[in-house]
Image 1 (cartoon, rainbow over the protein chains, first blue to last red):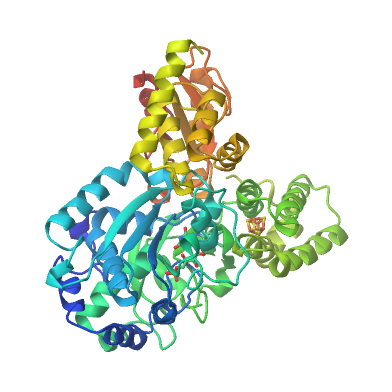
Image 2 (cartoon, protein in one colour; image 1 turned 30 degrees about the vertical axis):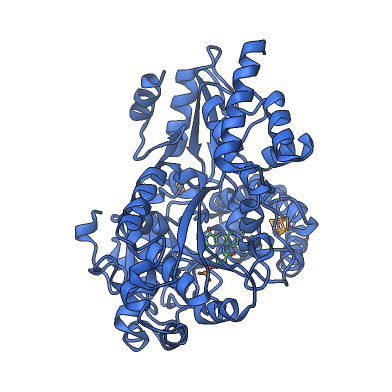
Length: 401
Length: 157
Ligand SMILES: Cc1cc2nc3c(=O)[nH]c(=O)nc-3n(C[C@H](O)[C@H](O)[C@H](O)COP(=O)(O)O)c2cc1C
Ligand code: SF4
Ligand code: FES
């Protein structure tokens, strides 16, 4: 889809380059934090932490330096909305960072761009150079005396776990991308020990529109608990895959209609670390309070084998686990072995039940979100597609994929 | 490695250290630059980098071993990575994978004898709406089918 043909509610609307930065520097920090709180903007990276709280904590921290990090590691299977934002709407992402810098008193920001997106690096750096010329980056930005801010893009090198905010910071510091124990949280001790905001690309891109039009306006879309719009990355069995901007609260059924999905058996919401829903659950709403998601929607039609889908996800986690903690390093292997047993028909129900217990233990005992959420697809697919997997002829193996 | 090759690599690393600085956060950008030029980071390069950054060479190796795009062993002149994640799989990745292996006469994880291509699988590339997708060095190719994939590979040097 080309940019001109995209239409949306917030992000995919017209925006005058520089307008939000110019307005922001006429406001006080408190004004900006107030608008963000009014907007009830929550993190779009998956966890849904209130953005105003994150910014307020970092603004309140006392330190010589503070940093803004834009999390552009977008590694969750089925997610590609940040790609579209970076390629087609870089003004929103970068200006969101500038406004964050102004609000918390930071002079430097990083974009942590996944290595797979290296091909965007040149155009993004050109855009930053243009912003410097336009005085939207650099010294005394938009004429505001003493407000200095610049942005540097750092490349990742092919590790999904580096999207986890503390692993990302480790990686920025030149280390292996292994998640840290939290607390301390990055808002207190982040990059090189300084208070740091880590925000998703889409979260930052929402900020300029909120500054221009206000928090109250932002709440006119979405639900009470999930305000505004969300970008959904839609892939799999449908006629029109792509990125869609929809109000929070849209149901799965509505989304399926919109993208021309027919004969749908299953929808994976939230990527490999999300949950897999069956037809009975397609009336559910996409919202933090119901089916929450970073925006990955993968559609499977009736011909797909759900055990094969699950195997693909578990292989992903076995490869991407950083190996630091046992529940995740060993647990994901065990779950994958279990899936392979089901595929071959060499399982016992007793063993599968003990793997479900293991999966629940992993959700509690893993050190970071990777191991805590990797059992989600295992548990939801085995539960929601129990008939196909355990009771149909050939345990689903006969399905094509 | 020949002596003059070592000297020029040492000079290159010195230049990179000048550009990125000799602090720990410079390690990844320096490794990425060497990786992208040579497709691997040799023992000698690791030692040179370690010396400039005043860290142990094992630290450098440990970072390389963590990231799937960094390699300590020589690779082919081009690295081809096909996405193996589910949306590309639904879009027909297996047929593309078979065709590529047959054409190049190697399996995933291997390098052609003329060292032209190393073939690898990778996870989701963020191109799930236009799969099957692969990256050749840094360039992304989408909507692959066997013919198109083979044509692309035949055109790389
Ligand atoms: C394994 C793992 C991978 C993650 N990958 C990403 C990512 O690619 N992009 C992202 O924005 N957040 C990712 N997150 C969430 C981040 O840790 C963090 O919550 C987020 O960047 C905060 O930004 P937000 O508040 O704007 O959502 C990931 C978390 C985990 C556990
Ligand atoms: S949960 Fe997995 S990815 Fe996270 S720290 Fe433990 S081993 Fe690493
Ligand atoms: S699944 Fe292949 S690019 Fe996302």
